[in-house]
Image 1: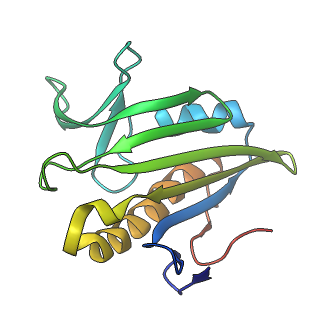
Image 2 (image 1 turned 135 degrees about the vertical axis):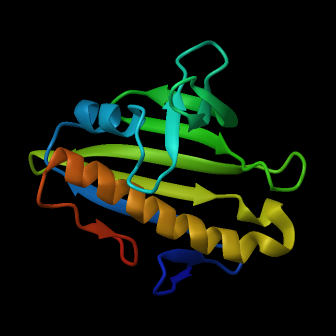
Length: 163
């Protein structure tokens, strides 16, 4: 497996994975809560997680009415440890979705938040472009979370991995 300078993983067996990670000076449970709170992620995209039996999450288009479109389902909800989602966009091929795994690891008095977004091969010819776009989007989202947790900080790693 190799990595390019854009934070994408490439393997001989398959397509790239977009990933990003950030250290926040807060406990894993608090970092999890910051990520799932309805927020703009600093990118103009407002996401709301619904804590119902269906495990849906939606992108909000109208903050007043709460109208939006479902963009995925929660597969694993483990506050302070792990969040797994299916993810889709309205303009993707019918039935196509990707997979997102977010891990929260306590370390050095804070939390390392890691996002791995995979399954772009399901999108057909646009897979490489969309993967690169999501790498940039997750980097921005985690930067927003880090700035919210630690004002004045928020350096996000997207092109190298902490070992």
